[in-house]
Amino acid sequence: MLELPKKAVIDDVYEVPAAGGKLTVPLVSHDGREEFLLDLYRGRIDFAKAKYQNRARRVVPLVRLDINGRPHTNPDGEPVPRTHLHLFREGYGLTWAYPAPPEQFTRPDDLGTALDDFLRFCNVDPRPTFTTRLVV
Image (cartoon, rainbow, N blue to C red):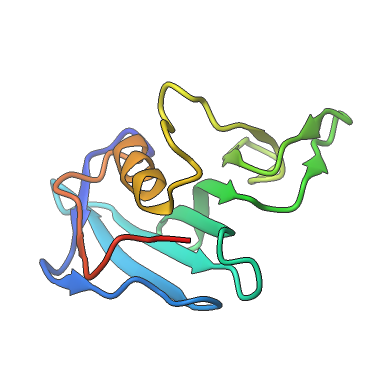
C-alpha cells in the first residue's frame, strides 16, 4: 500500500498547521481504487517537533515520521532516537521505529524538506501544494 502512487483528492492549496495544529489531506491512488490520508501534526510547545503520517483506508496507519519526538524503545528493547520512522508491522501496527534513513530523509531538521522527503517516501505525486514552508 505504501508503494502505491497517490495524489491529493482535491487539487488545492493547503494551509500548513500552526504550532499545536494538525491537518489531514485526503489522498487517493492514481487508479482511484484506494483512499489514503496524509496527517500533519505540529508540536504545541516544541516548534521543532512534528509528525507526518500516511494512513490507508482512513484507519490503517502505514508509516509515521516523528521529528524531534520523544525517544523511546522498540518492543525488543532497542532504543530509538528522537527523529525516527515508524513502519507498519503485522501484529504490531506502528510500535516499531527505526532511525530515519539519511538517504531518504536528507534534512529532518528542516520541517519543509522533511515533509517533501516524506511525501516522496509515501509515493505522493504530484505533491499537494502548501501555503508556506514548515519552519521552526
